[in-house]
Amino acid sequence: MSVVKEYMTPKVREASSSDDLATLAKHMRDEDVGFVPVAEDDKYVGVVTDRDIVVKGLAKGSSDQVKASDIMTRKVITGTTNMEVEEAARLMQEHQIKRLLVVENSTVEGVVTLGDLGYEGATEVAANVVREVSKGAANN
Image (cartoon, rainbow, N blue to C red):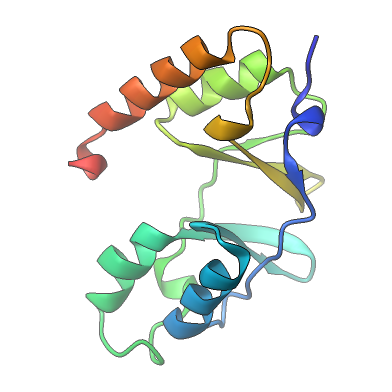
């Protein structure tokens, strides 16, 4: 059986809850990602997506006044390094998410995305997840 650890991107760069929108956007640009874990004292406290920056952040005001803590998602669906890939895909489908933060003891270990799922039958699972995610009201 395949586990998340085999497919995840390890050691992702984290942001601080005090980072402003410009810092978050530059971070995403530099890392070529659309999702940044937010950590304090080496423990994850949330995530910020590129969509959060635009929809929640820019709508609130000046980019230097709005912080990650103002726009981040705090209740994050997470997986573990030893979770079976099929279970990770099920979580992503059930919660309509395209990226799953991988944590151990509240510490970010990495992230696994739909594109990372490279096991037998992954195309079908990924298609199902995308179909379910696309149904979400927040995506319309």
